[in-house]
Every structure is written in C-alpha cells, then in structure tokens.
Length: 105
Image (cartoon, rainbow, N blue to C red; front, side, top):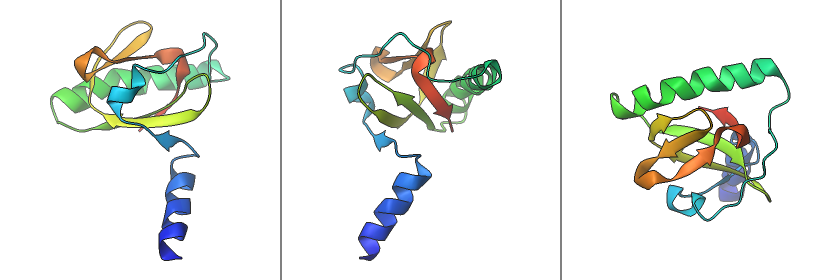
C-alpha cells in the first residue's frame, strides 16, 4: 500500500507525465501545434530553456523536460546540450520541438 501511495504522489508531482528515457524520444511523433496557451508562458519557457545548457554543461545538472507527443504527456530527465530557435538538443543528437515542451525544471 505504501508503494502505491508513493507512486501516486510521484505521478501528481510530475503533473501526470510519464517518464521516458532520452533514447526513446527519437521514436516519438510530435504534432505542429503549440502546447502552451499564453505568450507569457512561451516567454518563460524560452528563458528556462536558455539556462538549461549552462546548468547541464557547466554544472552537470540534469533538467526535467515535460512535453507532449501525439499521444501522451511525458518527461525526460537529461542534460540539455543546446537550444536552437525551434528545438532542444539532447545527448546523441536527440531533439524535442520547443513548441511541444510544457515545463522545464
């Protein structure tokens, strides 16, 4: 019972997003629509993403990226290597479209 309760707490903590390994990200399909609703949310996401490579590459801190593919809500905990105008680049050239990222922690 304790294990189930902890599992529920983790799911709530991760906003219902399912964890995925970065190697699995390249197998996903991403729609072209934006997941955020306001310009303010989009601006805040951009600021958080611009900090992510510094935290990962200099301080060796892993970042949680919460995102949506065509079917479900997911998150990956990894080092962000770079951020382009439209994609986040992870290790081994794996990318996630910025417009599909909900949150950066």
